[in-house]
Length: 359
Image 1 (cartoon, rainbow, N blue to C red):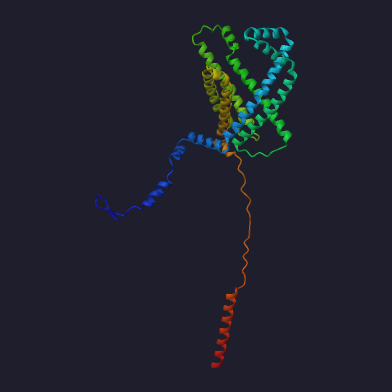
Image 2: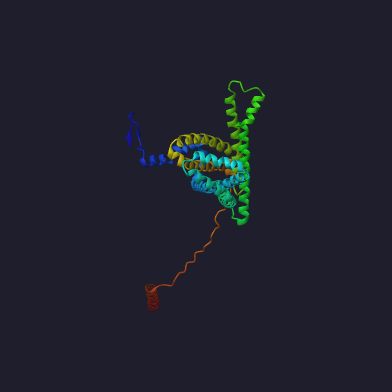
């Protein structure tokens, strides 16, 4: 019992009950998630990304992206070799330019390399196509597996040949989508728009340059939104909620545009030194591909953790019940138990005889 300052008598509060009430209160993070639905969605997406090993898949996508770069360059060189073989005047012009600008005997060495590349263009092209096909299929398989994991979709492994044909079709579809996206971006910022502006006599209007810049950004965002929506919704190996993918594609397109602008500033600053000229492009490529892959997978996790997607998510059945009856075998009495039973029986016999004699 304790008196308060007014003289009232009250019971002392148990400290253990106070600590139990404090432990039952939600923490700061839980309160913020309950108060802000958007923050709760971010946390759900981050947990999905971490639980499904998003960084691991992003590293695999980066590896196959760099692996595919060499055969693609081989194909480019082979195509250039075919073009130069059919244009001897252009070939002579390139050789003369190399001889005039390269110091000493380096010009003749480079010309010999050009001739060697042209003569072996068939072999280089075939090897490049085979390497590009291998790297491209590996890249696409990794991307599709990563997107499927972010959706937590249940996928049964099918026929190997059918799976690879599906990956090849998805790779071709992605290539076409990128070509359309780049074409729309070029139309939004290329000479076609400037020609239209000249036809309309708007080239001298104040602020037309800023308006064209904004138009090119908007067109680029719309084009990338379409590509990301197709990737998030159609590349997973199992059907997913398209509506959630469309919303996540907006986030991916905006994040990609911001990252692209930051990457351009980074490359311009890195390539200013000799070390940057040697290693800057490859490091920039690695960073760009890795963070783009992480961004894509996080946006996919975002789409997979919306309320509508969670309502349609696959729920695995519970584990089968295992009935294991318990059989208890009771053994007979031991040695001590047997002696005790014999003693009890003897006492009972003696008691019966004594009772009979008294009668």
